[in-house]
Image (cartoon, rainbow, N blue to C red; front, side, top):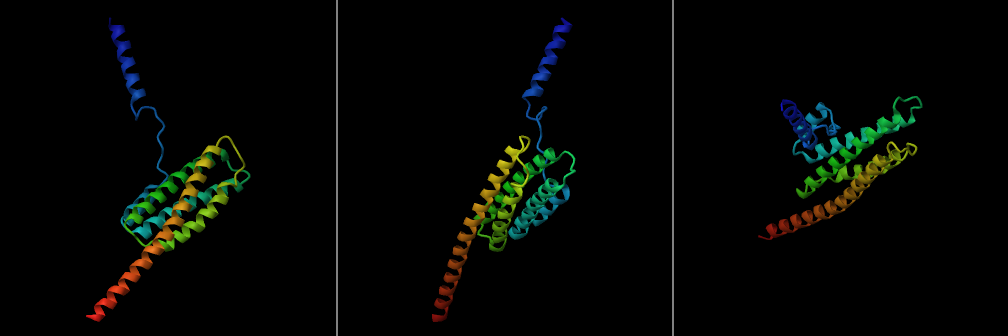
Length: 182
């Protein structure tokens, strides 16, 4: 009887652990360091600063991919490239989330959007540098898709913001003329 209860209890514990989202599931480590997280917090609602931080973080991952790929004696090259590609994707997605959030607020991001358009072109070249490998080809495709999406988003946002700012300037001039007439 005791043995049956112990086995049943053990089965329940194992079943709970397997079903539980925090069980033995692989957790995705945040690609940002504690210092970088603090930098993002400090940038808070400063659109230009916050987006520039993410551009820098994504750019650093791209440079790391380039460096590891170019190093002929790098240890665990495929694993490191895979991990960097995944980090690149997550950070690129975070960059786009920030761009979207600040776009809704009509924050003037034109300067950084031009930079993103240039950088995403550069990043595409870097992401395609490593030789094909089953260990990271899917991660590379995902990174390339995220990068392409960031490029398209930045291009559209730049166009939209340029039009919006021009309209705002035109409206301000018209209001100024109206006030001068009074």
